Length: 74
Image 1: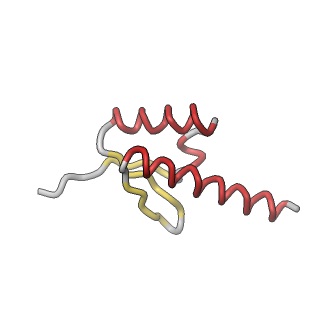
Image 2: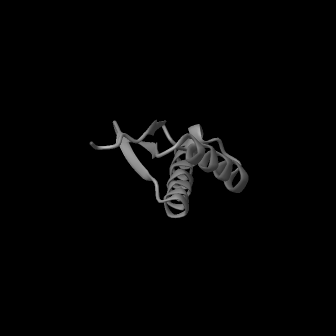
């Protein structure tokens, strides 16, 4: 039974990630097979965090393993 709960949790996570990517046009990286959010500005990270909380009642850290600021290529 526990295995079923974990599988549905992963599906929920994928669902949230897809919605975040569509709404914010952000990048999701993979770190050791876990999703990491790459954001452009602190304001964008705040907006994403508030969106995930308001729409999905989850913390952004429950969905993404980490959140990292994007680096501009010079």
